[in-house]
Amino acid sequence: MAVELACSNEEAQETDAVVDLIAAHRRAISELECLGKRLMHAEEAEAALIGPRLDAAMKSETVIRRQAAMAPVANICELKIKAAYFKRLMNNGWCDVDAGDLHELLRSFLDLPV
Image 1 (cartoon, rainbow, N blue to C red):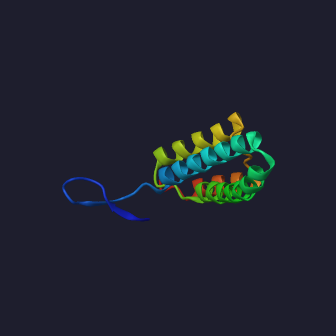
Image 2 (cartoon, helix red, strand yellow):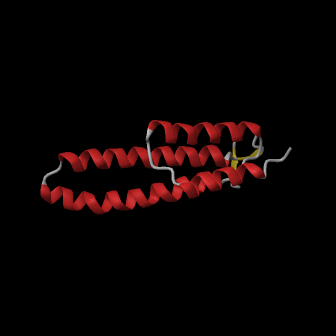
């Protein structure tokens, strides 16, 4: 886990990896949505330029989603955040969560310190 300066008393604290990965995934989904909208309204020449960017963004989103699923949870609060996020992903149709993602998600909950 990365260590960043988190408060004004200059005491270093660990960043929250689960929340950071969820935020990164939300940004990736937003980028996909923007590129998809541009592609729908683009002329043929512009669509040829957007297509490869859209493919790269889709691959990036898939990688970030898998990283978020695999990220270990440190406490029950992170478990709830992560479970709620993946529930929203599946219920709202924001992206396709495959069986491998669900498997890694559940596996990450096994290592929760009690």
